[in-house]
Image 1 (cartoon, rainbow, N blue to C red):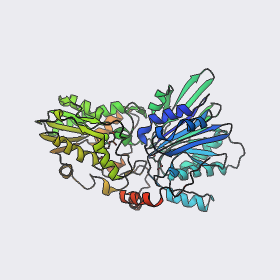
Image 2 (cartoon, rainbow, N blue to C red):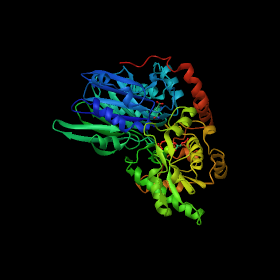
Image 3 (cartoon, protein in one colour):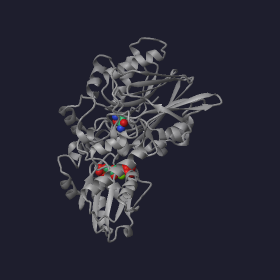
Image 4 (cartoon, protein in one colour):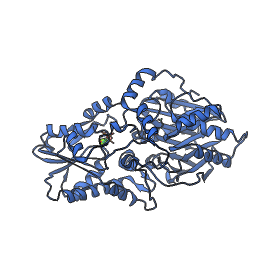
Length: 503
Ligand SMILES: O=P(O)(O)OC[C@H]1O[C@H](OP(=O)(O)OP(=O)(O)O)[C@H](O)[C@@H]1O
Ligand SMILES: NC(=O)CC[C@H](N)C(=O)O
Ligand SMILES: [Mg+2]
């Protein structure tokens, strides 16, 4: 769930790209990058860190031109090295740069094919470098000095035929314009917008609508699954469906946790969907515990707040901000290692004792994944003087790995895997625990857009919409990306590549 952005403007786009990336920072905290194009020359800055740390005035001044793309990264493949920060670049054909949100499930086979058949070298373990080279090859094989929108859509059709998994991508073809595309299941989100200026229409593509709103663009719509968009450097827009059998199946975890509440994804207001999650969860609590003795509802900031407000309202109990969040500590779930995540929970959240003393509190979180947050938070509530601590998760139990762009690679790390709700309550130290039912979560999301019949719910059900994920893939993924493997890799190879894809 990285954040991607692209703008074709009528004046310099560096500041707008920077501002847009700050609106997408919650999607990736590990690395950030921008590449711009001016007079057929590219200017790139990327590195590890938050947006505000990666771009200083001198970098901003160098990012020239009226067209560019950007990325904030949360790794799901390869390593955390700055060498794998995006956008990636390949010089042939035409000079193409790419920013990718998602994860390819056939990356190994593609890498092999790219080397043996397409004679292309992939220098990192990032699946995004593979996606870029597949697109480059599909363009290359047209064997044309000059390409038009039809050629570009032909190449994207080729990408859909070869690539599997989740991918929303924005690419820039030097001298031509900006190309964005979404995988045939629409797993990862991508929207576009436009803005009228005195000198013509400007276009913008982004992972979430919030970036489009804040920059003063008007949201046009989501790209539908399989669709591609091409905006010429002069500002002409073309769109085309490039997949044979697209099936709308957006990732439900975007609604649960990833996206900002003020975003609209696939026509669904994330905010309203989260309110409905709170309502359904309250109804379930009333069904299970009609004589409950909850005194107060307390959210675990930030993401659960929206659901908790509505949950408290339906339960007819007070909603209180019992935990104060340190605004300078980023999101913990998307941090790379367990020790960092664990330490950060305590740095991030602190209890206001008077909201807990002598009370039976219901703590609400949007989800429980590894259990890092809830274990510590329940203890903090007890230390703050709570009589009883109940816990509600606005999402169902996360029991299976995610393979489409969220870093949940190993079942061993998932608290709910092979455990009952009672066992989990015991481990986290809650007096009782309640999870949202999947049907209610889906109903809450569907109410926002009745046309969406399916969602990718793989982390709750183990059913993978792309149909290509088998046990051996999951074993490989867990082997490569479990926390211990990541930690070992950090010491071995982090900065060894040193080929930063510099333009
Ligand atoms: O069970 P866990 O593995 O701890 O993961 C789930 C937790 O992580 C998230 O919070 P996060 O701090 O990442 O983001 P937020 O501030 O947006 O809530 C989420 O809201 C849960 O609290
Ligand atoms: N979370 C994502 O979208 C990750 C993008 C890409 N797979 C990477 O690891 O860099
Ligand atoms: Mg949270």
